[in-house]
Length: 106
Image 1 (cartoon, one colour):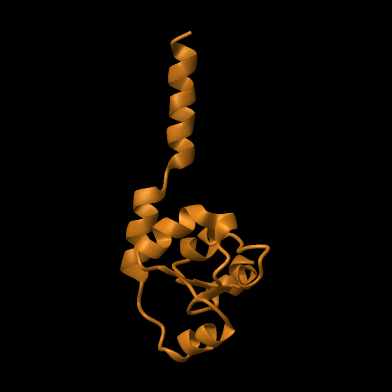
Image 2 (tube, rainbow, N blue to C red):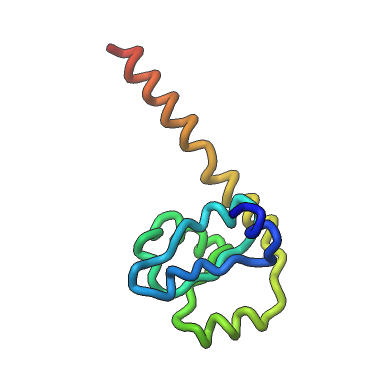
């Protein structure tokens, strides 16, 4: 999957155009690709809310809006994506460190 995502200028997370909800956006962001998805993002509410606020993910209301968005030239979001990843990265290490602190306090 990473190979195909790596070939793109931006990634469409198509599940967001169905009521079943969107899929993982982190894979695309990890490769520096901005994300477009439909209005159904309840399955990825977080991190989508943060990514949308950072301007690196967009929720579009319908297929017509998606086509219009794809007609726009791709923006260079690399700096914003790198900042987002730097701000939100490291959760696994923080979790493991917290577990170590809890175990050490026993």
